[in-house]
Image (cartoon, rainbow, N blue to C red):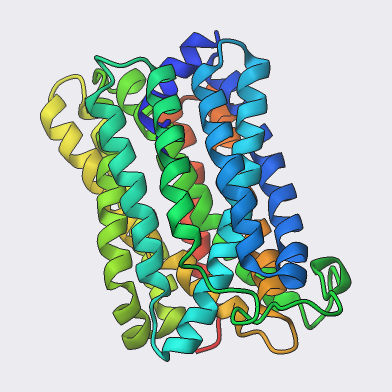
Length: 371
């Protein structure tokens, strides 16, 4: 997330328009799909810890390449590596969290995701606050180096394979469960729901800053406000998410979140963007409220879908999470590409209707989750 506030500059440094940037973002999708597929297989055979060890090396390299890019080829390579490491880390970390919940006997999944959102918020604020003084290259290379050294001590605290229920033996990989069958249809339904939520999250991450700069006229730093507000709302929702999941249950938590986020984000953009010329301060508040609604709605959605997937009978948790995760993560990465293509064809404010509709779809797909 360190690159969110720097996306407009990186786009310009590589000589890209919105449509071209959207196409290049597909490279991160390819990396994410490959990473999630491999992670499901490797985790079930070797455990989560070795997979996370590999991911913590890959992710900072991808981030630094993105910052160093001055040509589309370098940016594509950096995005691919980042997607590969990110999805591997995502599947492995969520698999660990499922087991930790079982060992502790209480819900903590949403709180774990809140910590991820806290990191996203911190790096976004950092990127926005130093945007006028530090180049995207120095920003992203510096964050990559710091993250690498922060990851190393964290590895020691992870569950070993003999405790995370993946201690080896005969491999039961994602490829060995049916692609389509009655038993895996719930995973596809959950994956589509998660895809809708992550498409909206990806749009807020990758296009929020550009929307505020190019379509509403806000400068460096201020243009990061949309994602900063979105992240803060998501942090709050996820820290409260464990209690919400206990009180409402996963189904209603996802349903209410999808509808709140979709309606709020759509209304915020539809009302705020036209007001930006005549009433810029009011417009910024309205759009920020819209992004905040999206953050509140999306916040507990990922944890709820992941937990529901891990409880599908007859399928190992790592395999189920990988199947749902690869669909959802693909949405997170490919969603901004589609939004970019629509922005080039129509306009970015109009294109944002696509993630709004996907967020509403995520709420509707809650009917797949058992009560």
